Image 1 (tube, rainbow, N blue to C red):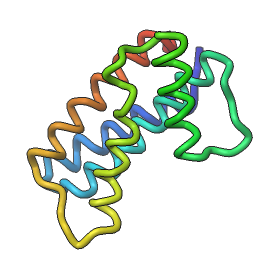
Image 2: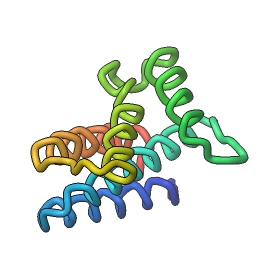
Image 3: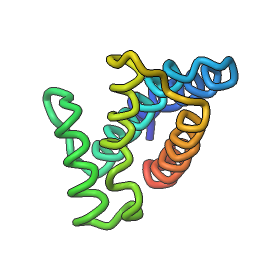
Amino acid sequence: MKNTFFDKAEENLTAAQVCFDSGLYNACANRAYYAALHAAIAALACQGIKRDKIDHGQVQADFSGELVRRRKIYPAKLKSYLYDMQLVRNKADYSCENVSRKRAGKWLSRIKEMIELIEKEVGK
């Protein structure tokens, strides 16, 4: 099944890795968050959950509440990934502080894992 949002997730994950490898840790955090967001939208769509408008908080709530907690399609450890990653992205985008290499690497690794799990379910 072709899923445009999953394609966007993969593109953003690639961009996040390029940014990380280039020492651009704030940009890495930004792209990693969007990779996770788009993967979550793809996962929700695969389960028939679609919204007219993409709202970050709603996507986070739907993914965590419906696909992790209620349907148990994804492991419990993923329930807070989107929210926590958004906090890192907010620091990268809206704060005077920089995201460290260690923190960017940690989240890049987690988002890769999340996308791999979603890919198995979406059946790309």
